[in-house]
Image (cartoon, rainbow, N blue to C red; front, side):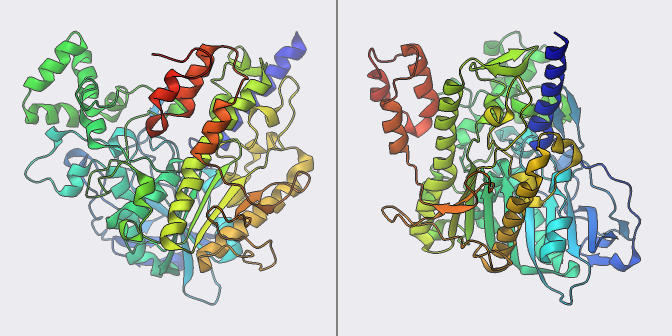
Length: 597
């Protein structure tokens, strides 16, 4: 019994590290306060800043790129920073934006800060800029995370690296007609405030990065998960045109939310989201005692003047606002975001169609990639195929079921985030489209359950490899025997990412001696166009030809006889083929008896 309890304790530690530290959206970097270095004094449009130096890299942390979006500036497009009369010590990260960390709310609405790492002395005054957008479902995360420290990429490859915070959750994406008045601009009315923050930060970089030895004419945006989605919003937004020149979307994709979904009641003719602004106000009215149920709240809301509704919303504290939303994995809220508003982002619902014509998006060289087992990070805590002890994964009811469900979910992710986009972009811009898959899964065996089976090459696992940062707590999951191999994979990824920032092609990396990363080829061309990152003791780093379509996924699913019951088969169909891929007739005829709701 003691052995089981001890092992579960180890699992708790390791799972916590995997799900939080490795996912890396919630853990701010802990560091000794640096000392200001007068040689780092720089002039910017928002005032002078002084940073610090460390191991050949100069750094400036917590530089404001927009006014604090507080008071009357909440739910408004960001405004330029007012010039500070004296030099600002840029020695510490700025506050995170309001978000949940477990059951606790942390962060501050005054959170629009960026950070810069620049080579200290290289004999040149202009380096490529890499602009990092963190992930976290657009509702959690911050730039001040140990994994996202840009010093190593900057030092090794003479890169100027920028990371940013942007408004999150309903403070970053929220639409309600009552918030618009005669002073509202089209940007204000868009509801895409987090998107506008990113554009504002890019504009700040364009205007100021030369003072930090960065080239404003060579900016690569890159981001992971929601950050990967946000990278694609920059490619889609006419307001971001000319502010960047290359793009890397890691585990991203793009789903544009219709205005009706963002604003309407869920029982309207054009239904809104369960967490639409109208439904959130319903919840608020019930909570404040102005209605006893949803029906009363809806009637009350429809009777209220716009000014009343606006006051009701603007006077909420961040904690009061965010508490109106139901949570999901890791504190992410699941609120509607990335609105097809017609100004910040095109008023289209099909992002693939958007990227099929260079006239409708910002054409730049692009890298699109996913991890081999994206879904396992989330499934580890929710799948019925995983047995739990004291709420922790401790074994498998059926590893085959777990792997099958992961394969459908992860392949669907790759189709949306890589293959469909790559095919569209390749057809549109002909050149400069590259893809990858991250396969590293050599984690530690903890006895009751192997982390290799539980997580595999899960969502976010590539992050420490891209930045070259493996914080000590995370090393618990990495077997000592694999550290050299992990470093090889990381070195290759850093080299390819840097070469792409320099030239627009990952080529053979900055060293010029790596495997040539071929560009994507559209079917039926079978030239290997997918770079796979894996350890040498597995199958190694290599180019393969792997293309998956929704049609392929559908054929595989319809031939699958592994489901234990018709109900399971029907439920799985709805998970695998949601939205536009759902075929009502096929669903009704599925399996032996068909499905019905």
